[in-house]
Length: 170
Image (cartoon, rainbow, N blue to C red; front, side, top):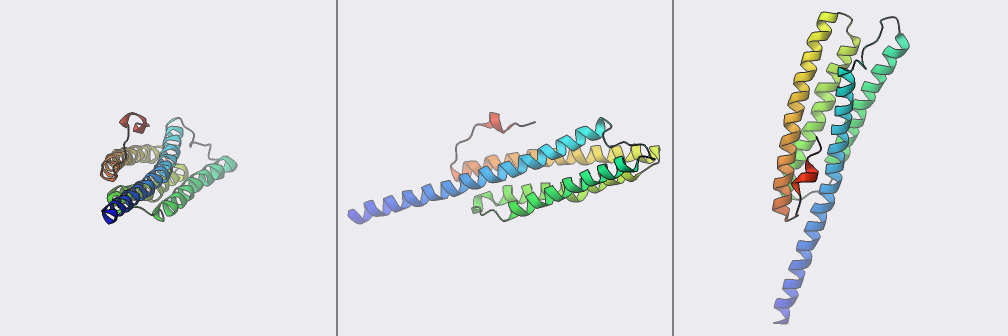
């Protein structure tokens, strides 16, 4: 009888430990995900408000915009690297992989196109690039939704209670 009680206590302790690991992982990964999403949203909003437009003769403004975009890409890649090292349970694998893909697509697909937009002088080409950036942003928004769906599935598998209202950070 004592062995059974001890076994049950150890099982409960193991389950609590797994939930704590999953909870800590979710907190950190969610923070990383939303920091990348917020940076993307800010840069995309700035793009459509004309914040990445400049006069051809203003080389200082041009270089500042390029530096800002490169820093955006570097920060995203650093966050991706940190996120890739987070220990997580098997139940978080799909969520983990999709968040890393999301971060990679920001750094490798969106920011190079944004740099190309800043570099381009021809207004017709810039309009086409603007449309491409909007299309890429839409694809990233779809991936954000997928990440959130996978996060909810992970939390459910891990037995972590959650409220879907605070997760809607649009």
